Length: 190
Ligand code: ADA
Ligand code: CA
Ligand code: CA
Ligand code: CA
Figure 1: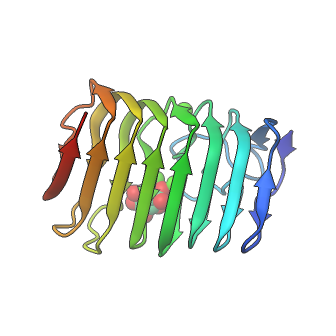
Figure 2: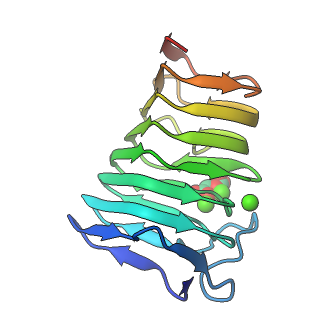
């Protein structure tokens, strides 16, 4: 279906896309280019769940999370400006699903957060995870049971000396520097 204005999943609610494909109206939401200030296809309020959704092209600015969120079995067929952005402090869990074809960022962290990525397939982007440039807040990234291939620059890039990444039981290849400026890395079983 064509999304003409951002779909808001209210606090504590579950949006189950039942496997349907959602594409942005390029005129009103965003064309999926590298232009900033596109709108998101989905906006997740605190405690929302988004599941069983396919984001087709154009995917505009993807998914925006405002607080805690569960993003389960969501497939980005062709990442737009980026795939998912943490806009307000919270704990975001991405479980299952995949994302591919990003010109630059896949997951963008713009507020202090915990981001857990579990059983996810990430391929073909500049970097999988980017804490917004120049920010020094503390973020914790946890990656488990995932497959990560073909990142030009890194799996995680930050400018914060306190941010951490933990990666376990994950397969990866051709991921650039892997950890770009990350001071605290913990890995096992990869
Ligand atoms: C760039 C930009 C940020 C923010 C971010 C995003 O990093 O510099 O201000 O807009 O993209 O959330 O897409
Ligand atoms: Ca951006
Ligand atoms: Ca793309
Ligand atoms: Ca963006």
